[in-house]
Image 1 (tube, rainbow, N blue to C red):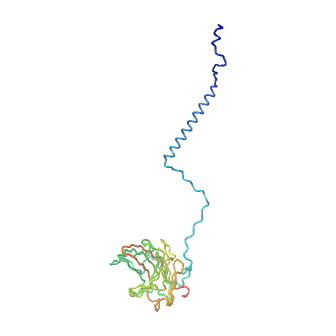
Image 2 (image 1 turned 45 degrees about the vertical axis):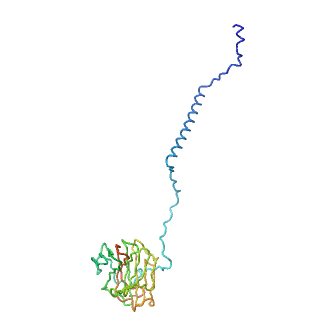
Image 3 (image 1 turned 90 degrees about the vertical axis):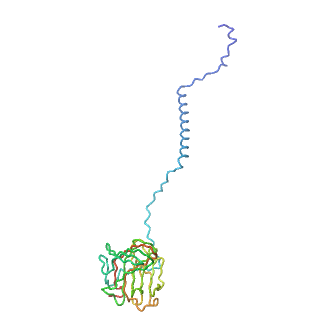
Amino acid sequence: MNPEDDAYAEPEENLPQVTRTNPLVAVGAILVFVLAILCIVAAFVGAIYFLTSGNQVLPILPTPTAQSAPQAAAQPPVKYAQVDPQGSPGMILKTYTFDTPEGWVTGTTETAEVRVVKQVIGGKYNWDLDARQPLNQQSYLLNFDPGVSARGYQLSVNARLAQGPADALFGVCFHYQDTDHYWQFLIDESGRALVAAHAGGQWAFPGEIRLADAPVRAGAENTLTIQVTADSAVFFLNGYQLGMLSQGQHQEDSLLAGSFGLAADVPRAGDHLVLEFDDFTVSTPAGLGH
């Protein structure tokens, strides 16, 4: 080498140093970089989906718990004494099961007040009634062959409002003497129960038995019972005593006079109702003996 060339040569230590990288390390770094990019893209796409999906959230399922016990049916007010007049009715004089009409009125009646069809269907005494004005409808046993005790009697019937307004009244009637003199014990599905006496074109409520919270079974059969003696009457619904009339609470000489049967009171023109009656039973009250 020419010695003059050494004057132009850069010192070796001033030359840039080239670092040689292992090829495997380089490939790993690239893969990490790519994975990081993919994670960022995935997070971005997920955020867009959440914001455009209506904020729907999977429902939170309730924590399983032990099955709760069935709730007891609502109990009637404690002021009504629990009694079962059907449990010991005395001597049963007659039970109408309505397998046949057995002396009850059947057929169609049409007047300016009402169109009513009364018939025995499937062991029920069925009333299908279209009111053309507010009205009171009855069916009486005017000739009760077995007769009743001269000291008193008990009436019981299962009645159900199969169709119609909840304030339509239905039940039993008694002390029927003519078309203007009769008494009725009626209920409706809103919980009303009342005792009404009709005379001289007017209604009265002996003993002010006009209840708004009676133990009525809406949509089901209700058992109405009355125990009648010459000077008093006791009224029961579904095994609860609702009230009693003593001799001083009415103006009648004897409540035993007259006949008895079934009744309904329709509040409005245009009302349509279907009633079912079953097991109309006449007996002597147990306390009166045979």
